[in-house]
Length: 193
Image 1 (tube, rainbow, N blue to C red):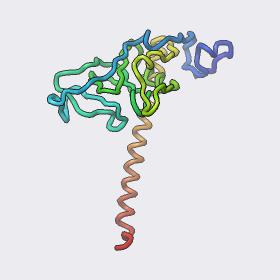
Image 2: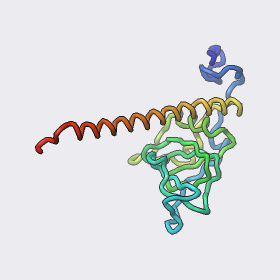
Image 3: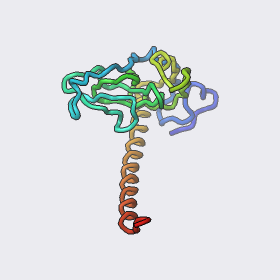
Image 4: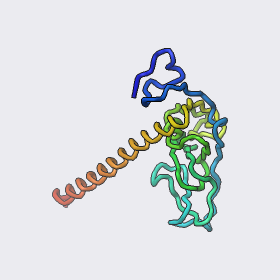
């Protein structure tokens, strides 16, 4: 990665992969994608396991609340963005899926791993009072700098590898915490016993 000359910093990042020199273009997300809000789920077709995941606004369990066997609303690749509570959290989705109410789906020709990180790096301005909420029109107003498709893929792949490494270490850390908890329970007598 190479540092960038100060004269072009406004249109390009400070740090870039070698071989990329084009300026990035700032565009509204709404001009670069189709943004749809999730809907209600058909509980009669909801399965615990199946072909097409149903994603909700939740950040736990990857947002999966169930599956459909023969139906989906959004064709992959796409990005989901939380629209209520912890708003603005983007996640690249590489399987066909159905979004539930309060989850926004962004369908675009841009690299989904790049787009996930570009959205997550964007400052979220919540206009509502009470429970924070992000609507499709608000998300569509996000201005994002886009590089060439090849550079998007390189950046997206780089951050995907970092996320995978973090997830791997997080699982190891969680396992070690559980082991410690088990040892503590077996090695120390319970208070009041």
